Length: 167
Image (tube, rainbow, N blue to C red; front, side, top):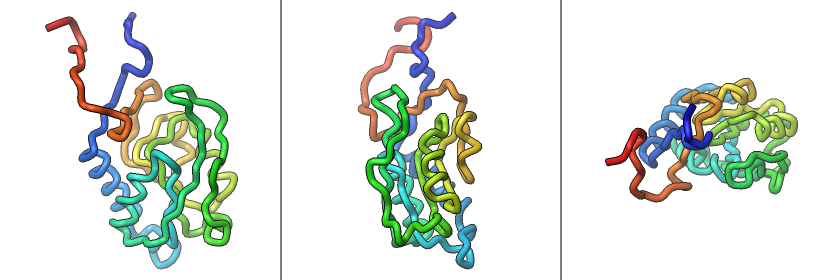
């Protein structure tokens, strides 16, 4: 049995990696929008979806970008998803032609709220865990449910003890 905490099974993502993976997601979404392959808008789920959404908007040349703010975590504890800020209602409608971007789907609670609000939107995440994967239309990398993803905006460079033993 391991003395590690659940979040210590970590997958560390660098700025370079999130950029590469977000571009890969953009390539996967290119030409898949309902308007002759184009998307009418991108909506980032804040805060994690903002960096990938910016990269994808650039790659796909989408100029209309908005946000939806849904809080479902307090630090590393997941709680009930709550909408704090919605995107422009006229732009959104039922979500047709809108690409909704997040960094990660974990259990799918956040995306369940989004799908209820915008049932025709295309939901894409950079990373997906098995429990939340059915809520996503497109993603790039799947990780195990018990893996904690450390994103670059949450990290600082520091010394880390070796996985086994001491120096």
